[in-house]
Image 1: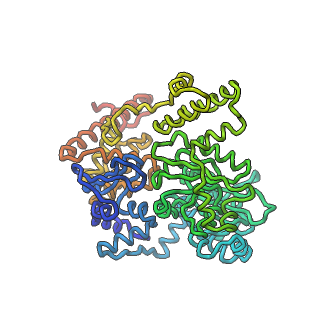
Image 2: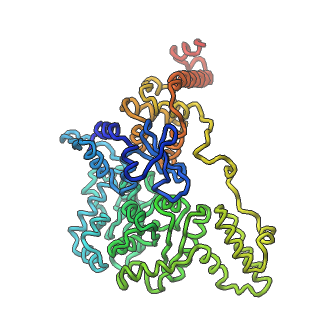
Image 3: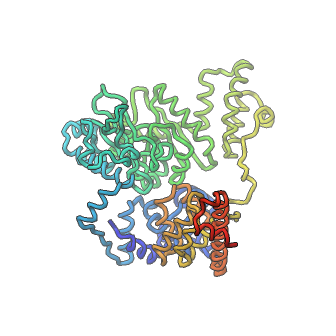
Length: 570
């Protein structure tokens, strides 16, 4: 474990502008520095780096973080590797935090967090793989080496019902259920969710294990793949298998290959195609598309050539429509019916597979070809049917140039002009904010608690422990403010970037991104100190008034002397 105090000092020593400028040339823009975002394709710069706040934020794709986060995202480093690299740059030695036996025992006695539990399970599965000749033989027969298995941290869940009990002495702990590692039957008997399966750990963007996919070894077993359930740290519609490891390769290749299975990703990486990812047993979602856009503007979907593969391709295309931008290239590749990516690359090799990728159909061609494969468009009724099918597709597309060219193709196919086509097909739904100023120029009104939060992040010395007593943590904005106060009290010498880094583990990615965005739009000035003090006083009065209202609801006889004294004050 690396002590928090060391990470804090390291982030404070690093100049994020100098760090990023070595990889992405920056230009001065007022108090900040700007560049075209290195995490998605754009023509106008929306990537901003703040020397005073010591963080970066992209108003286009939402990428954000500190110097540590930049190295993780840009170079594909793990958290530990990024810390070590930064420490080397400033001549610091990374210390390791040791814990004595009593501390370890106390920690075990306390229910571990989800991420800790999942990491321990991952270590157990990896150790079990080394001790299972049958599992090793299975992977060898699939063409995988020990090096690639280690790279993806592949493991094995042994046969038996309660193997995890050797790892977690408190096998009845609720956290094991929440993490999706243990389940209970109707009789209340507890047992391991994953048994006799090859285990593929799923990592989030920080490289932390958030879930697992388990694949059968025996063909007669079912289901073929068994995934972790949804948990507070794992949502299947948000994560992509292999993305954490593939980030650098995706940027180098200028494209990402989206396949259907874990084994496909690993097998392709074995053969040098290491820019592949997989959806986790679900159709590709708009969230997936947005996530991938942070790394490349060319997404190739690869599906089996059978009916199931073609159905999955159509679902992926429909889910991608709302996320389309004019700079995004979506392509669709269908393998021969007898192959999946794993079998094809093993039989034909990397050059043949990459040659096939060059034949992938663009999205527009795929849409029109699929809609007309059973429709010759000869009769009027055929054309009407086609227009009915294409109308909801056009309505979902907000990418103006792409939609215009698709409308032209559709109009030509049915013998209409584009204006005539638009008379019969309602225009695409427009975002309510489409006519507003670009996001990076907007200044919005914040709630009082949000404003106090944004000020505190830039003036952490204003944090006072007594202010925590006036905040309603069940209200999201005040809950975030309380988290910021607690973090600032712990790290009073922090800048905004490092405070947000320490708060990040307690926030969802969407909240973290929105907070980075709001801080980036907030200009720091000395008057904020008085504004913060006045604002906290208003929150204190609001809390007192709410407390009085609650007391007034009680019968007089039920009030304590202290509560009666509070009511007398005005």
